[in-house]
Length: 257
Image (cartoon, rainbow, N blue to C red; front, side, top):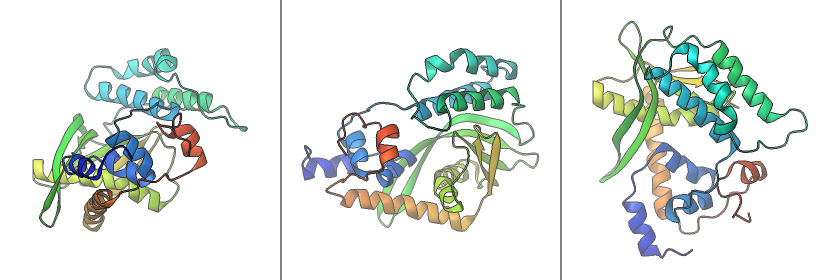
């Protein structure tokens, strides 16, 4: 490690945290170290760039920068430019074609979010504190879409490129992010959201999670627990997973696994 213990402690103590910054450590401590301590951005991947592209289209729609009839053309006309990376090889299907076709189908059938609620805002910056005894950790993020239903209850929506969650456990892990955002909504508006939603756009499906106070507290505990583990870490060892390491990790070109 090129950073000494004193420098490392100072950098971590002064960090502003986000869900991705916390969760990336769980995925791979070495990837976390290279990204947030060494400052290497690395290389994007096809799945991430495709997801970011669809996020951008939906954000511009929510902000009334694109109209609903513009979305399909925006996706089709700019897909190759916005997704320049190769998808992993697959002997059963062309993943690039599958991903493109999923986007075409989604925007061909897209009818907006009026059936869910009225749009309050998109890409809303989140700022809050996560507390652990006498410590406070600054947390930031962005809510993809905030809506209010007919009863003026809040709904947090996160756009996801995943087609589905592998299990209820994985779904609950992803929901940690939205529960932290729910803390910000409570602080800003005086009440928790009624519902958390994942817009699984590649499957044209909405996953609904009614707000649950126990799961909310579990999410807060999880975030603080991982931050404390990061503060205690000294080795930042590699968590080797062949598919992730070879296709998804931003540092796949420089990491020898």
